[in-house]
Image 1 (cartoon, helix red, strand yellow):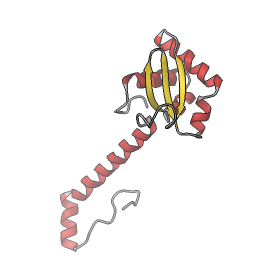
Image 2: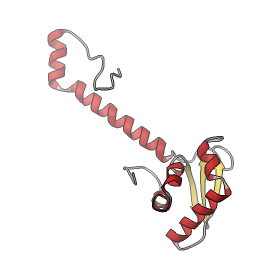
Image 3: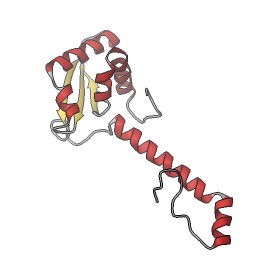
Length: 142
């Protein structure tokens, strides 16, 4: 899904959109990356050391394909630089798109649970029966 209400740099979202349009399997991998920068004709992205996403993206063929997609989209050449998280790029600069989506989803689920438990009917049932809410929702999580 394109933007998903993500708190990501605009240029990174544009890169992901361009790659998603040009080669969706690569976009799925890039979403696991941590955007570092897009300045001076280079795109820098960091990946967890040893991850399959890092290993795939750093291959010469993947870098060439990504550079071609970027040139087609932005009308200029880019050098793609892939870092390992913590190496070269310093500490993690941003959450990955995948991490941010997971966090947003968890926050939304918690909000729904909290609203359900706070509902007047639920509160009345707790008072009438002298109980407590152990879990809410279909997932059975407490």
